[in-house]
Length: 246
Image 1 (cartoon, rainbow, N blue to C red):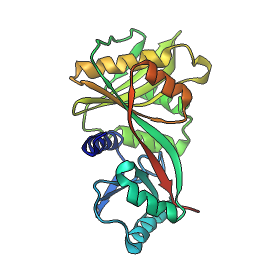
Image 2: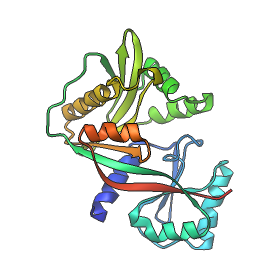
Image 3: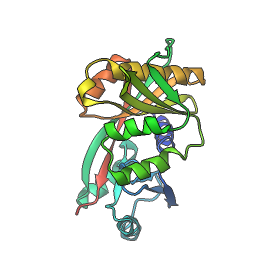
């Protein structure tokens, strides 16, 4: 994939999952969100720029240490030199993930059992927090993050026999509907609920003018990878994290 395309998709997915605060420093975005998700608590290189010298890296490590966190870098093949340097310093590679897209060529329909909210309704958030097994502290952080979108959003829950069995949400940016946190409760998995939820979010994206579906999935999450492949999503590239050694 062309480097400019990776940069565009990285920008879309970064802004579609907003941190509580961001510091831009010499071509790097330092993102902070009280430790809730690595995406929102990591350094994202915005452009090639200068490779880190000891002083620059030490500054980053100090900033995250002050927040009670290890320094974590989110990297792609565009950051090969930085990845090599961090590996040599003992930074561990974790959570290799796949960025996937789908051209919205067919027409998607809203599922009658899927409810969509434009804001994170309390009923949706309770289901989201329960299925994601969020701690009390993570619930507070997630509520703050999800309430801060400037762009259009859709928060979806699929109900069966009066209770939510799957939920997730989507963010509308540029030409894309970006999907996040598609989750089904454990007792209801392998029932097609995740597929139906995704269809409804893609339908919402089409209604708002999106021509592409976009998502990120941990590469070794076999059930999720299989679901998205069956829906026609195709991998564009991978990213991974380098985490500061203890």
